[in-house]
Image (cartoon, rainbow, N blue to C red):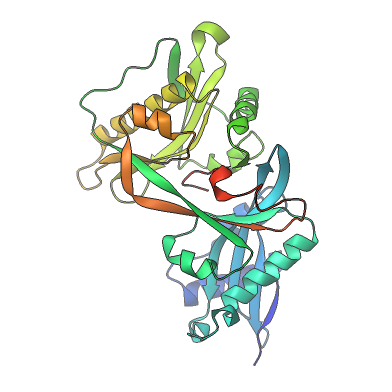
Length: 327
């Protein structure tokens, strides 16, 4: 029987829970996860398509909402996530574009474009890149992973006039002022302000560090960075913002490396932390290089698909973006 494609709705939770349990090894799609990503998520919540066969859901492709800024203008955008297809439909075809995942993607892109959304983007697993390059309207690029080995011989000294401490709340007007300044260094970026950061990184997984420039600005934020232990033996640095690409950025990186070093020294022997790692954009690279970071053996692919005709391919060329490893 032919598959039918439609946008997912809040009423699909029981059927999608069944799909997750039977067709993936991800564990249960909990009511709490559904509440966070579909009901409570900003900008209308998760979008995406489902595939139905004889009235039964046999596939899903979710798209997580965010705001992006392109040349100073904000657009609603979506990040690809969690494609699932029933095992019986995971066929190998001479025409990959006939696959249900492709059909769900194209259905979602058409619907999002029709309602005026800006673009779809992803920092996907490298195994997806070859598949995604089959889409003629997608642009691709990559950013390198850089690292510093841990533990340090000794903790780094913060530059004079800067202090680093946990940030008590992301609902802080200084976060918005810092984002406004940092966003000028990259023509394209996922928005990181008090509207979006609390949902993106405020769930407890991340340690959020604020860098203050105390001497000249009376406690104004000179930097902000979120980081956490991720994967095998690494402390992953994400969501960096700084008031400038020089002293403030260096102080922000120093602050988070010192935090990573403390966590490495505290780590259990069975879960060591051997490096601090960061996705490096061209704006970040000079500061990272000056502090001793080196190129690691990994590249993050970045994929962009324009939906809104007001955006040109040159506007959102991947090399113009600020992205972090958790985007």
